[in-house]
Image (cartoon, rainbow, N blue to C red):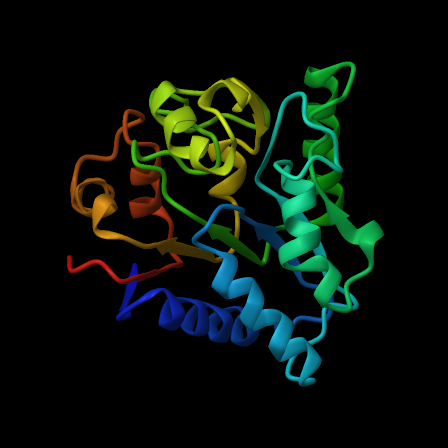
Length: 237
């Protein structure tokens, strides 16, 4: 694993954007896995700037997002479709039909998960997967105890995850208790993974991810076994 230390969130966003550009500019039809949350916001802002400056194009790119809340409509400001449109898609030259997110309002959620997996398989391997890290070691919404072999599935969110995400909602009770998420088995198949971790509050869990046992109780620890991971962080490790 390559570890890149940065001084703050702004530098994290710039460095991550450079890595994304370098990773996909030579790929004719790049397939990208995207994450949400506060950590990637600076990355996406920088990608918008680079796209507008002509440094990169997303015209032939296809994207798949890691997860989506169950029960939120696409136009709900807390949905991840809304987040992606607002923070990235509306500012770059990507074709909206090539941006794929799970449908948290699907009538048959298990079928939605299967269809998402089939579409990814049909599209081809993920060239670059962007990940954040949860305080309990989750990646996407794969909570502790999730099988490393898991594919896209429905998950009951851990209370610590609900608590962490409540800052985006008016009340903690407004946070959905379920989500659809790309599985660890799916994530780990990406050719390259870009892990973004920001804030000293994640120092302890990041050390477990990097140097602890590879265990399903720390889902992100599986990244120790991936051959091409780049970590960008402002944490002293």
